[in-house]
Length: 214
Ligand code: HEC
Ligand code: HEC
Image: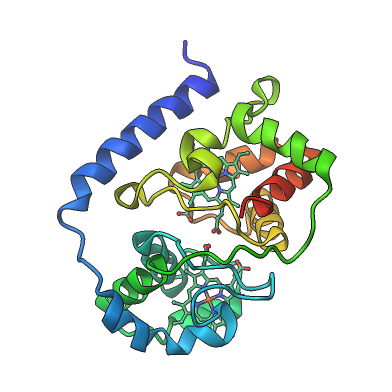
């Protein structure tokens, strides 16, 4: 009988296989066309994707396909944890526009400036959770899906977003939203399950670690 951790291992392997197979058919985005279309987004996310307020996630360096997926999820009512962003997503007219905008932000570099300074002890605890998880409570290690230092796996494995260097308060909000069932657009409930199994202390530690990775 498989345990939960082995099951996640299999899910990750399937996701990797599926993304590789899918990569060839996905519509390519054009970063130059995307720059013009992204003007609408810059007021909140920063024109280069480096927002300066933790309410608005950084999009610089994020995978184009992940960005396009989130836009579609907001449009289709699959991601329901923010009305402001749902309103903005409704203004993106086509899938091609979503991919162009996504490609533009993916091509931008994440700025090396965290909004908050982190507590060193908390960051150390968080690093351990990121790399080892917590086998006793079925918290599958983040590195398995989100890659070294939270930098993701590869652009064609965009099912797993870049989370290293993201604003801390944004990360905390997402984990709390997954936990509470307020965000449920994660494939196979992967994040919901993990977020629910984390203690408050683990959540605070791992987000402090991630936000420090710039
Ligand atoms: C008025 C402010 C505002 C504008 C303008 C805006 N957004 Fe957002 N966006 C948000 C907020 C707030 C969130 C965080 C939602 C949450 O808390 O879950 C968000 C989240 C997102 C996410 C999810 C990121 C992630 O890491 O999951 C994407 C992608 C995104 N926005 C893309 C865009 C694009 C593309 C545009 C322009 C068409 C845009 N946004 C314009 C406020 C804005
Ligand atoms: C089994 C794979 C898997 C593991 C392990 C995993 N995640 Fe995720 N995570 C995902 C997927 C898939 C998404 C994207 C969901 C979507 O499409 O909206 C995600 C999204 C997220 C997001 C939202 C990112 C954003 O920009 O909005 C955060 C935060 C996050 N994960 C944190 C973590 C942390 C912290 C850990 C370790 C404790 C972890 N994840 C472990 C698969 C995983």
